[in-house]
Amino acid sequence: MEQCVFKRETIQLKYLPKVEKKNAEDRSSQGKLSRQIANLKQTLKHTTENTMQLDTTIEQRKREINEISNSINNERERNEAMKNEMRDNQVDLLQKRLEKAKLAFTQEKNKTLAQRYDEVATSKNCISF
Image 1 (spheres, rainbow, N blue to C red):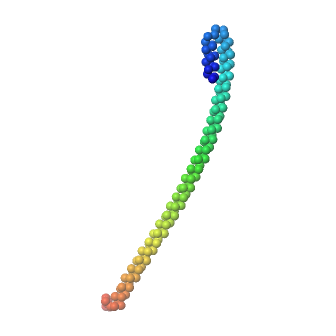
Image 2 (cartoon, rainbow, N blue to C red):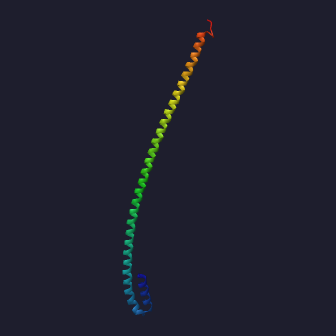
Image 3 (cartoon, rainbow, N blue to C red):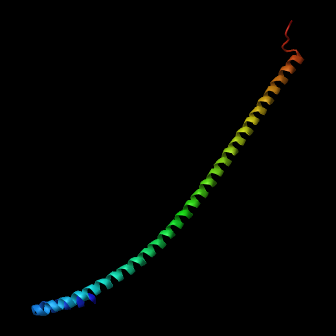
């Protein structure tokens, strides 16, 4: 709408005599200034609204980033706890395997000693002194 008014004034100035042109330019320059002021006010209003929207969006994104960061930290702590628990379970398993092997060795040792005592008792291998 404003552009149409501006074009109309420009066309009118083009066909006016020089004296009238000068007076018309003074009036049109005042109109131009008032239009520029109105445009600047409108631009300022839009810029302010956009700035407020951007601030709101930035705050929302910051909250989202904090939530994601907290969930990542929670998962990291949970994974660390599970890792420690698995390490403890592995240590327990190795201890039980070691204990089992130790018991098997003791059992085999006792079996071998029992066989030797039986051999000595039946005098199959008599050792002379």
